[in-house]
Image (cartoon, rainbow, N blue to C red; front, side, top):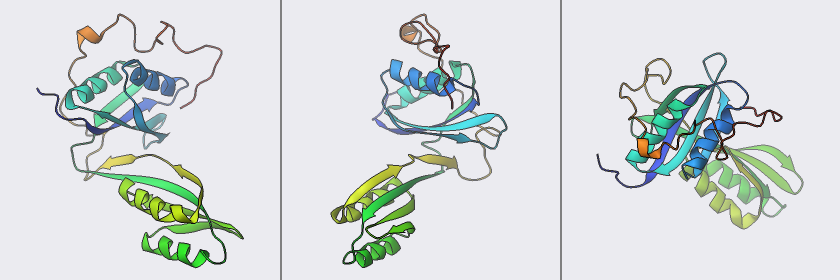
Length: 206
């Protein structure tokens, strides 16, 4: 199996809704020197389970090893890389833009062109909400930049497989490859680089 080129891989991870889980997942990526480009967390259709969507740039072998190592974590219920299969990806963004009496009309026209919507209006600014692909949001941000972007927040990518398949109910039948024993440092993936787990005096929340 060849590694292949680096590309953005999108992992859907179902975890138990318990304190400390987010910290453990993020620490796994940190210890293996992977930069998380995007991470979103929220409630899922399964009671007492949260759904994470994690975007990481890696090759095919790195993606399979990440999937296998995520399964090693306590509290992780299901993992699937939905990069290759048919899936729908979206992102939400809110942009606060300066809007004077002279520029407000032009800003509103751009909002209509990108099928966004204005969610707040002030005498000197407007807040715009948009949902779509990363390319669509990048395009809107670029055309608004000359008018003066005061604030920008993006949720990061969320994704869902097309059709009746479900990550929890009908996951990908292919199994993740076993972790490379050469990468095993003898510590549990629930431990920190120092050999310690979560600080018992701190409450981490998904």
